[in-house]
Length: 352
Image 1 (tube, rainbow, N blue to C red):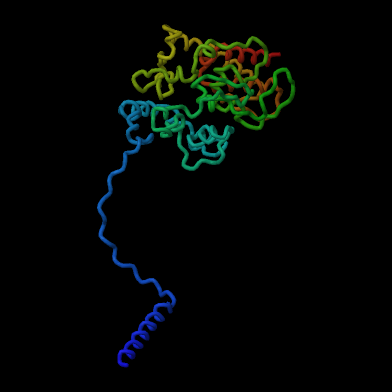
Image 2: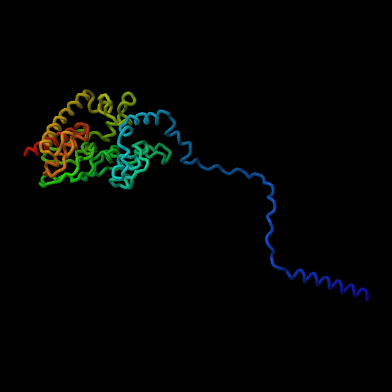
């Protein structure tokens, strides 16, 4: 009997354990994380990747010689782009040519003006003309503008190679009233004392475009067809004395008036200084003659300012031509034949 009672007790204990196991309660909250284990051993080093395109290994392409960039910067510091240019004119309508940021803005948009006023304006510099730090190779010297340029006045498209970069700004701005049409007689009102091409006729005169072509006989000098890259060929020829003219000074003559012949000698092996002086004297005489007539009409002051008023289209066109050649500042050297014909025909038209 005693063994029977022990058997019953064992059975009851087993049933109690089974009941306790099968009656599972709700899961409790997660306890706090235990302490971090020790750091494992370092894994094997991976395979080395390919050399990057923008890494320091390519800096030497441009910076490998202390002569390359420093010499250009030294020359540029003697340029009008650095010393002048009125870069403080940061309004959108002016900044497109007067500031570096505005120029790049305008080139990107294709418009005549920058898209907005420019904060912290800068004069033209390396970044204005070259695609600096885009590829970190010598391709960074590529120009920021290379396409042929459609002139704002006259609408002709001009392609002067690398000089296209310069032509984007060195062209006449649209005047008000608009440039008259030769042969169309009308009365026009001038409201500004600064009527004309606005200081930038160089590229247009070189190409023989964008002026008031009254009369006949117009032709271009050899510069227009023979100088492949226009401004660049002559204004950036090898320097004389390292900094006075040529290279990134963009100067053709020194401050003392000495011509840098390095861009001229291919076509003019001798007598460059005399040829330039003779050409300029002839054009200067025509400018003086036209100035006298414009002052007599009352459309221009002796200081070269336009006089607001109403004038014939011929008178307005002749005034524009005077300013076009005068503000080119080469005194005809850029395109002597065209400049002389333009001035002579303007004088004749005012006499009729």
